Image (cartoon, rainbow, N blue to C red):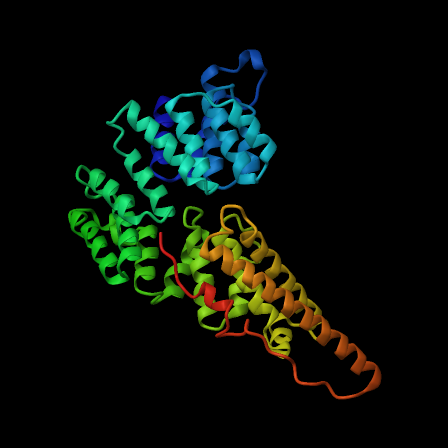
Length: 395
């Protein structure tokens, strides 16, 4: 059992929670599964918690909660439930588990991670800085702070913090990639890609299967730095990687820039936006679908009737997405926030025109008179709203 436990540990920390989960299942089955509580060995009980951690990283949040419930009440269990509540968007449970977090290093790191995931970057920075004051040897925290400052668009500050860490760990893929992203924001893609060459040099002695250029993060951002070159081939295989949600967003931008509004919409139709950028991108996608030529829209959707009604619904959803960003207290005074509110008002006008067009068409069906030409708006390709998504983001 000890050997299998170490094997599961190695799989998990090696980035393969699926294999780790199989080993934990094997260990649980070997112990007879769920038996009477008096006969359950303490070591077996905690295996449920470890299995729950694997399920969380596999994106199976409901299963992770159920599995964690079988384990003992530990700080690890609390952290797993805390993160699952965040992923599921359950604010009540999130608050409950937040209150159960302690001042331990692991619990505070979990709290900072959730702050970061919710876009509360300054709150995350405050926690990381406090942990660094307690122990300056926690060098990796500098990377976390640098990532927060990158999100806050303090790219110069982020670079300074990264240099501190890279002086002792020059081959860190995460740190080098983040430095390249800062350079991309401050200068251009060519200089950013040069930063990635450090990884190639440090990996020259790696075995064939460990080529750093095959790292998903590096592959994704190299395409970004090249302005979307070969984007479809490079990003499509990354859609299933839960640690790279940017791949889906950037592929959506790629399709919009190439006039493939339907393909862009298909990528985002089942995704619930959580950040201002995601709301804006989904709003742009709905806006373009709503302003598509009626005949083309009907062909793409395989419809013969009600295409105008469906397009009107797209415009309403675009309006809602833009309004959420434009009315947000954190975004209303930013350039994206003000652009979003302007786009919201524009979409309201487009929705009214679509409603008017539907009314005219229904009247024509009754009278037999010819239809006027369909009105056009600035949301068409080349218009105001779509250009909002015209830039491929990195990071």
